[in-house]
Figure (cartoon, rainbow, N blue to C red):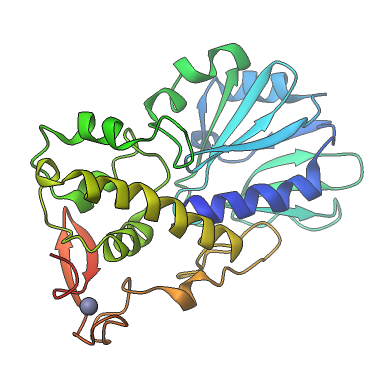
Length: 272
Ligand SMILES: [Zn+2]
């Protein structure tokens, strides 16, 4: 699944390809992909609109128009590709935005991706954006904020790091890396974390995600960004997907467990 750094990479790549392009026509070949409004309204509203900017909130892409945002989540396998008009439509191309010179196609083999078209002034109060917590780089993300959110939570920190309503954009791979660098046992209950632990979580969340963005994200399984840019971060993972390998810090074997149903990798010596 694309995580925040991959979505950031897709956003930056797409910006180079479609910024200031006018949508002449929209084709929706898989209606279930449009969560809101109706498919008819979605098509009608976007016709003639120019893409003014592309932003990211959590793992959502936001295409900005004069009075609307098109909000798109890639879920497991969603990808955007630029095609010539003459290229035949593939069976996994589900939504097509036609420009004058070429077209942007949303391709999704698993069909889990979703799109919303939301009034600009209602963005923060509407689904799905209203459910998102703070961005990792938000100045409001402080140890006091986390303390408030964590103090009554008995759930393991690994599970809570994935809760998008607290910090948005931390996926499974990055949560393991953040906990390794913070020297925290993924099973530790949230309310037991002290000030230093919370400061470490914030610090390493930013560091890990910034580093991953710089490298274009990870490419686990078939994920590619808009123009086929492959992430390099998977070469630098410290614990995630490294079960059986030796911890780079202490030499103990890295183990894999399941936490809240998610595969979780950690060093039992470094992470207490
Ligand atoms: Zn270790």
